[in-house]
Length: 99
Length: 473
Image 1: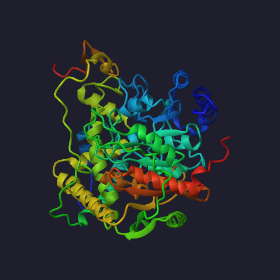
Image 2: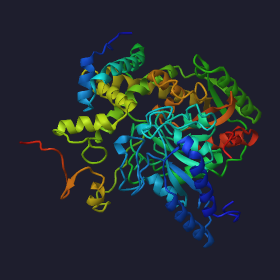
Image 3: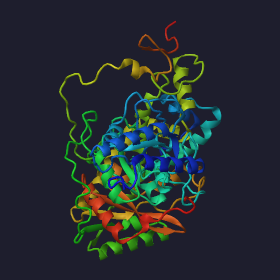
């Protein structure tokens, strides 16, 4: 067993940044402990020889079906945008990005 | 009862709504109750029946887990993120059960985004186990299980990504089936881990599960992973003999961590199957111990990807007064998601990040293949694989909230069916200290009929499934 899991508080901040999850300073240390515990569990996989084993991304051998390339849905833009926090003239509004 | 006119759908619906109003304040199994729509829906069903229609589910009340979108209705997924979300369309499962004439009473409580094994992760509060109120009902379909156990509805839908139908079914003394991956459409079912998620019913009997699954299953143009394979008649051969059924018993299922009471209840159930003519065959699943480690890479990785859509822009929670776009993303997600959801998104993000992808994600997918190969080998000799659904009966509320790994180990026996896409059913087979115990049967791909059949035969000669929690008259 190797031990690549030795997460630092900086690692937690970096992972939170990648996931775009804002964390209170107080949440970082407990998360570091939790993630370290979970990753230690996951480490068991490293003891297994998987040389030459085909990765399984999907259960079964399901082939994805293709449908005919024709319009099947009606335009429901207003209904689909109704749950959005801020919409104007069919656009989703966000804070100004370009000054 | 509905068919022979003993009662109307309206009466039945009123009966369950009255029970919900009286009993659910304490149990907290429901996130929303749609009394008016349910009553008007039931009246419409009574009219259809009066006009000669006679489909078996016509007018039967039910509850959907709050992960299924219902057009115009509140769909929260147990999260603050979707506290005020009203879906702009309905899930295929919702449309199909509507079409079969089922009457939706409301939406069931659940662990946030279906992540949890105790229903303690709901933004709308924990659910109590009706058998013992200081115990958890299991999760993530904990509301669905608790409400059917408390007879607040005869059936509820659930979803199962790592055991989320079967584990709460076991904890609440119900029958629940997770179908083969691709048997039921995932369209409109809020995604957790797209290669693992499946929907299925929770009910008192296998017979009821058969009828509801019949209506849920089948191909769907809107979900390309949903199978075109024809759906057999699940109810037709339920009563047939199971003489000669070969039941594989993996010794790995009876090792450390399994509660003695659960083990003996499951052994007795297997003995009962022998009396019914089944043959017990010892099989081996050598990689069983790797299921949880592999699952806790694959599921969080897929979740981190799926849940990136909750960004405070197109739907769901948005933080107050964002300073800029980055602040909008991070605070909306930081404030909108609960602790367990953040934990899993971060595990997945880490496992998929540059430099770790091969070590975690690829490795887990290779181990997933080994686990699947184990089942293929077992199914060369047997028809189904049997064992406990959970290592212990329901545990006390709060007992495992501080230790994520202890919580994850609840799913020890259930995650393999999701990793391999296999169907699996849990049925009540005993009690330990007044709490129900579940027996799990796992079948080959698209062999739901055999699982339902085997469960029904067991339920014809035992009465565990008919026992009810006390004090809920």
